[in-house]
Amino acid sequence: MKIGYARVSTQEQNLARQLDALKKAGVKKIFEEKISGKNMERPELKKMLDYIHEEDEVVVLSLDRLGRNSDDLTKIIEQIKQKGAVLNILSLPSFAGVSDPNLKNLLTNLVLEIYKYTAEEERKRIKERQQQGIALAKKRGAYKGGTRLYAPDSPNPQKRFIYTEVVKMLKQEIPIAEIARTVGISRMQIYRIKDRAFQN
Image 1: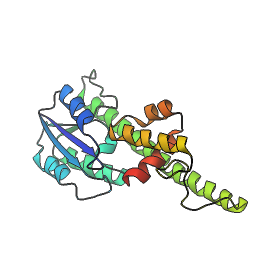
Image 2: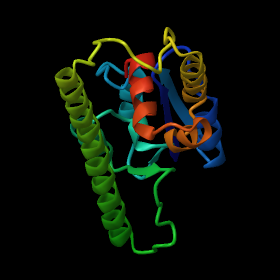
Image 3: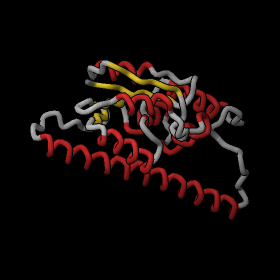
């Protein structure tokens, strides 16, 4: 049986995009919740993990819907495996054409490990760049602490507008790369806005 899990980080965000994708993938039962991935008490996720059985297929739109860091994701994926179920991430290759189940599992696990590593490294790089930027700004005497260009109270009207549009698109679950192309700012800046707006 295909069992779906959908999550957004705040009550204001919309689950419609995830639910539509899960239904199109043939999911029969969906567990959904509006709660931050940093919150370890995710009741619907726990219900889903308790509910699944051997030969079930857990379907999510993207891996970050399950957890927010590599350790968290590893634990959840291991729980799914222990139940005898398999995990299907719609945004990643499914290897549906591979007939050998052992090879399919091997390829899927490899992709998951690469994805987790890449996501973790990207978060580290963003933090490092932020710290380096702050250090350089302090040396120049240009660091203003909490002052941000892209913010609801930005002194720049254009950047205030961009901030508002980015938040709207994030609530609609539009991919980060697509938002960056649409508004013309970097993906790193989108992640910063997301962190500030939703405190994920």
